[in-house]
Length: 86
Image (cartoon, rainbow, N blue to C red):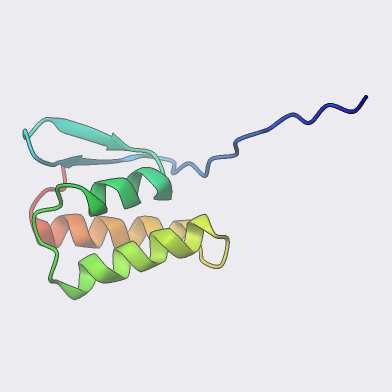
């Protein structure tokens, strides 16, 4: 009998990015998946081009069409514009 092992590969950023969302506590963002969650839930500025570009780049990195490093850079840019980069 064959056994299938499910393996969850995550893309990680080195170094991670830190932001302050919601409660103001410093949050560690380790990669595009966590970044997309942060952008989707509680991001203070959602009508800016840097925000939409960061979301798109993170999503593309997750489905392996985009660059993980580009997603990180766009996420940092969006955090700077939103005033939450820590």
